[in-house]
Amino acid sequence: MFKTIEWLDRGVRMIDQRVLPTREVYKTFRGYKEVAGAIQDMVIRGAPAIGVAGAMGIALGASKINTEEIKAFTKDFKKIVRHVAGARPTAVNLGWAARRMEALFEANKDKPTAEIKKILIAEARKMHDEDVLINKKIGANGARLLKKNSTVLTHCNAGALATAGYGTALGVIRGAIEKGKNIKVFADETRPFLQGARLTAWELKKDGIDVTLIADNMAGHMMQQGLIDAVVVGADRIASNGDACNKIGTYTVAVLAKAHKIPFYVAAPLSTIDMDIKTGAEIPIEERSIKEITHMAGKRLAPTGINVRNPVFDVTPAKLITAIITEKGVVKKPFKAGIKALFEKKKKKKTGNKK
Ligand code: MRU
Image (tube, rainbow, N blue to C red; front, side, top):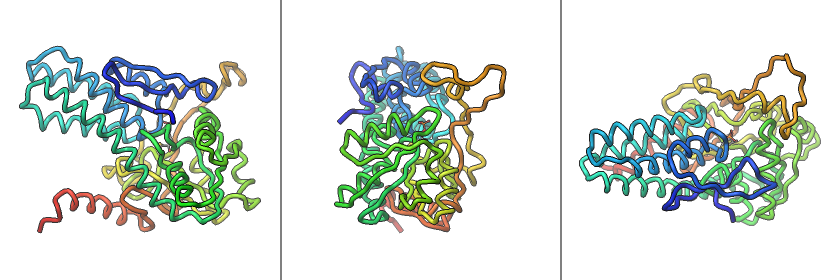
């Protein structure tokens, strides 16, 4: 199995997702600016994966700070955190990871800088391993929702490549297969970056999972033909009311699923839920280069001199979502109360349920 991201003593190693599936190339990034650049350029992508990459980038940057004087160290550390956290705006996991690294730094500021560096590296590595375990729990929780023989439609790539391993939406598919279910997958190609065609199809094929690739505009037809039993997608940020932001085109799939009475599931870890926002309207939607729309494989297809837009995420309103699958359980409507309860469960566990 490939490794999406890995901490090495000499830097952070990632599989270059821009060149998959034609080439399997690994790149090692040796500084925090390079790691932030890799996130921006989509060498690594997917909300949980960029969270882990962000934490590793921060640890890498901190490990190279050249002073033992804590005031100067703090100044450099904060600069690194700001730089890495700003690499992409939509997936909340990046900010979440940066805040976690910052809080750990604050809690250990009284220690010698050499020790702080070790603590930060250990934390970033822990976040990587935790992410795989979380995805396996999401997989097990979601597996129960799929019927013994199901064909699942997914959009974009919320698989091992979008996480530290196993995946969120594809984790649900893997979890169901591990339980002995017969699951087939329809993968939307996911224009314009083609995460579905290039990445989902590649990693499912590698795992021996039955996958059929379709163009995005074929999803409705497949549903109308009765070929889809459930939709499972990931998320980049979920608002506290359950509105879920995911790869552009997800909203369209959710509307189609509703029209065909097909369950629409969102699989994501708690780190993807943004309790600071009330609805999806508050989520910043990243716009990327218009070249992704006008060009294909480096060749211009659209005429010059026209307007082009490239928002790369959209928001699916909570009312179109059947359930949100997390590592702490499956949340159904009303989402606001259910999501709040997930975080309360987490807090209680931390305080050992003290009265
Ligand atoms: O632009 P990307 O490829 O980083 O966007 C990722 C997604 O939107 C995925 O669909 C995913 O569900 C979120 S990560 C598990």
